[in-house]
Amino acid sequence: MAHYTGLIEKYRDRLPVSADTPIISLNEGNTPLIELKNLPRLIKKNVRIYAKFEGLNPTGSFKDRGMTMAVTKAVEAGARAIICASTGNTSAAAAAYAARAGIACFVLIPEGKIALGKLSQAMMHGSVVIQIRGNFDDGMRLVQELAKTTPVNIVNSINPYRLQGQKTIAFEIIEALGDAPDYHALPVGNAGNICAHWMGYSESVCEHTRACALCNGKCEYHKEKTATRRPIMLGYQASGSAPILRGRPVENPETVATAIRIGNPVSWQQALAAQKESGGWFGECTDEEILHVQKLLAQTEGIFCEPASAISLAGLLKDLELGKIGEGTTIVCTLTGHGLKDPDIAIAQSTRPMTVDAELGPIERVIRDNLKNI
Ligand SMILES: *Cc1c(COP(=O)(O)O)cnc(C)c1O
Image: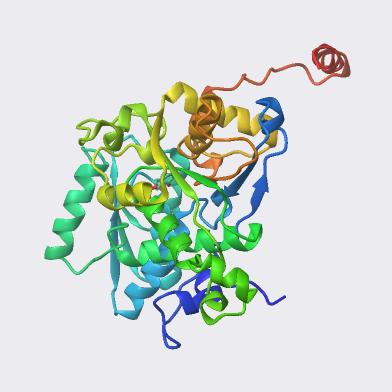
């Protein structure tokens, strides 16, 4: 197999690039699709649940998929600087890809509301980090104004190339499973990613399923398509930051899942369209439910994702319990970012390590005590 060099090279025939486009890549994409082995047994449901672990992208979130495209196209167009508003992960990705491209990067983040790991990335990659006394929605509004008055290229998801890159997640899932899953669950913040997923699934589906079954996959249409169907899309928002569920913008969104702390999503209407077209729905989870499932996943499956990512599984587990999703189905959850992004949250909800003298006795006692409980 050829050395993997990123999603643009792999899917260049399905992306808006030409042979001359200077590709800016960190070999993003190609993330693992991990079947959850213990959770279905624990909840006593006969379902197949897969985690698409986007935390294993180069900067630790799915934002790299969109950023490789956005920065590639910005460089192709001659841009010397990019700008974004961010709840954290967009700034981390923008900073890294700008460094790779040798262009400047400006990021606007809400003061005190971004996870430490993400902030460290934006700073380390040498972007200009501007904290604003406001939230993400304020930053988004300012960035759109700034792009009119200064020579900077916006790399938020209103940049259409972002969604083009992000749609490749669906291609990878179809390749891994042989077809689309029955359901796909994911967190919804600014709502770009749910649209990108839907775009990727839609571009992959063979609408001539019956005819193609007859042709045995040999007709011209089938040759270009890789799936026979599209999944039902499930989008989850945090209860304190759920504008789509409330049907109106949320003035002061609040949630522990800072990556989806967004009160007025840019891709709201397109997200509604994807939900309706797929026959899916939106749901919400409280911060307690999010953190519970983040820990549950870490401790039952060995997968450490950030709080915003855990909502895809938290929402799914609720809907499974309610019987909204039938047995025998296949479900993919996008785990959008790595748990290491937000170490404060992880430490705050875990037992503090104990301290003992550097001697055998006390440590042996700890081991014996703990083994008793297993
Ligand atoms: C950006 C982000 C989201 C939200 O994605 P949208 O496209 O804004 O809906 C969810 N989780 C993580 C970890 C993110 O970084």
